[in-house]
Image (cartoon, rainbow, N blue to C red; front, top):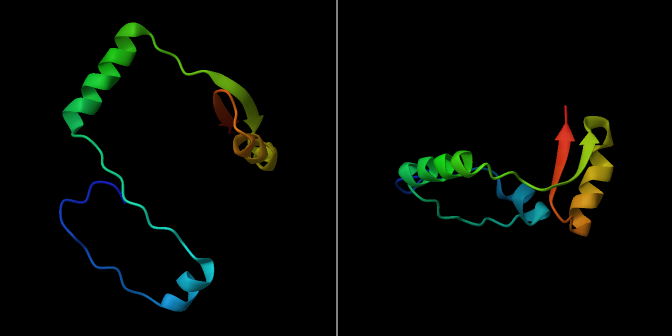
Length: 79
């Protein structure tokens, strides 16, 4: 969950969670103005992501294998 201003409670059955051994990790994000400044800078400079490989949606398992191996750039799934 991203964008929480205050704490919140989560409740539910614990057994399914314990069986799956999930990892809950928080992240910190900047404010909206910083994101808008970043987007403007990317647009102004023409920065483009490096695409390592593109996959059709039907090739999702192969794309995930490629992703886990550590691609040089982005792995794209085309719908």
